[in-house]
Image (tube, rainbow, N blue to C red; front, side, top):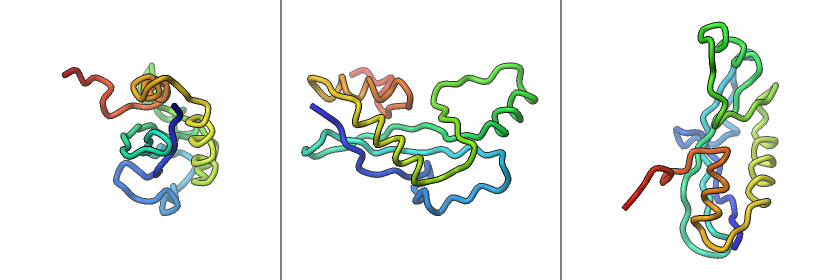
Length: 117
């Protein structure tokens, strides 16, 4: 089984192309909607695209900054973000959706990450 990217939006459900960070210090919250290729359904995986300048600012304010969920880029380029996410998702396969989602969740926050029935 493999996964496919269905949509890539900001956490506020805006298209990435509408985001124009001001200055070189930015951190954009992004949601990838991903589902099994050729099958219905999708789930959300959240992460942030942040600049080195933003990271430097955070380190000036806090002694430690957690790195999970952060993709680091010098500039915010929606197409490069999409290309990167598509590449990462294309590298994932598994026997079932739970396995695939768990692998994607290594670099993003899966909406069902802490869910237990």
